Length: 132
Image (cartoon, rainbow, N blue to C red):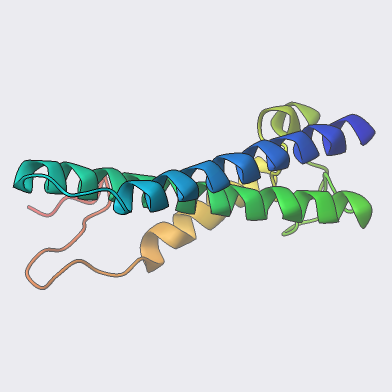
């Protein structure tokens, strides 16, 4: 567990550094003089992309923190849903995995069906359930 924890701590440190870098770059670019409309649109698009990436990095950071907490609680490597041991191969690929493959698939299926419906007039139809 020590090597996994060390790896997670290193990933955490790298993510924190990257989030700080993006935040600083976004702040500095916002302070520059704005040129023509195309420059402004391009700059805004870059800021939006940075925000999306930063949000993903923050979610990943939370997952890493959760995994480190599970290591300290001696619950790391156990599925939070069914309690079965998560295979080491899965933890190598996804060291912050909380669920075994079966429970992860079940969770994803449930999320798929509980997502907010699209706007009126458009209906999502899961693959294999096409209406005629």
